[in-house]
Length: 261
Image (cartoon, rainbow, N blue to C red):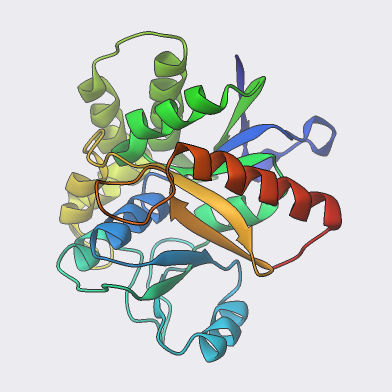
């Protein structure tokens, strides 16, 4: 299994990945998404624009909303910011969630036609690697979303390095990667604890390797991109292995047919 990585903010269109893609956003989009599922959401709709999120909300009036603009400030009118800490104590049982963020969600939208598409973060590390190993793609491409002109993105590079090691049969020490998340440029902004929209509690939750036993698979459903858990806990209705493969087959059909969200 080949692996490579690209950076969302310096893409080369000539090298577009088409097989398995893991869009990584550790601080904080896809850590927030993982905690949203832990809070009981039924599915997550990643929507790239704020206007698009509000349009979808009119169609899904029971949905909760979460998101942030570039830099981490909450989106006015949304129920939650892009904060796993806020979602940790929420009860969203059975409700859909609409998520809009400047990096992670944009990355999912950018690679929506990959044969298999995952939302990655450190809290989902081993589960994501296991899901990829089950699928056995020829290539896995890691998309680094956290690199900006003022941020090194090492929180996402660390997650990619962790996944890469797991996919190649290694047994790495996860704490080494958690430390890199905490010490990344963006991680240090949370450690400063000087911005109420970048709470240090979020950093603690984001830097917990393998906190959850499911991966987040992005699928096309009814013309919209949705995140679903790819591995079922006993007794729930999340996709299991056969459903994962069937979902990817449906996604391939949608990709060929040009479905848009």
